[in-house]
Length: 82
Image 1 (cartoon, one colour):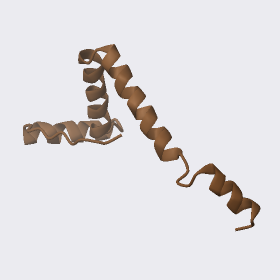
Image 2 (tube, rainbow, N blue to C red; image 1 turned 30 degrees about the horizontal axis):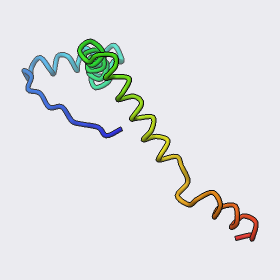
Image 3 (cartoon, rainbow, N blue to C red; image 1 turned 90 degrees about the horizontal axis):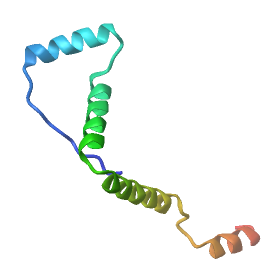
Image 4 (cartoon, one colour; image 1 turned 135 degrees about the horizontal axis):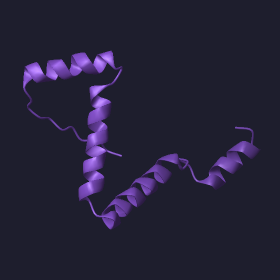
């Protein structure tokens, strides 16, 4: 899946405080922001649209896992010891 970058402005002092106190709890800012984005996605994007996106991701994953050469060529190469 292609990733996009989200950039926001936030008060620097508040951000520093968040990082300081999250580190004390072994929490990661980016991981928590990712969870928030996922919850927003699930809250606002209708289920049929999410299912469509997931099916496209599955198709894309299947394409990347398929061999680059046709199976018949791979079989012939294996039989010929190449």
